[in-house]
Amino acid sequence: MEFTQAHVGKMEAQLKRWGSQLDGLVAKAHDAGTEAKDDYRQAVAELKAKHQAAQAKLDELRTAGTDKWDGFKTGVESAWSELEAAFKKLRH
Image 1: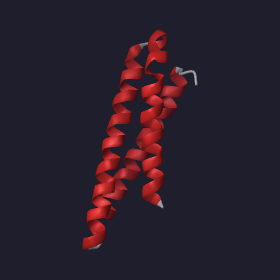
Image 2: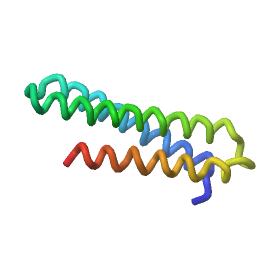
Image 3: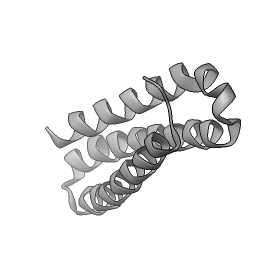
């Protein structure tokens, strides 16, 4: 995958959408029953950590400049995949 400014913009938009969904999941965790609440809170905490890691990698990518994007590609794609998988897992 070749990273471009447009690609970074799309990733930033998706991270914002996921951030909004994460806020909703935090509210659901608060309303969950006691037993479910612990599991849900743990899953949400892991999701928050992955979201922050993906945001950090994207920030690095954005500031690296186009000539250095290939060096960040693997880290960004890995963080992105982990975050996407975590969201899918929590929704199901």
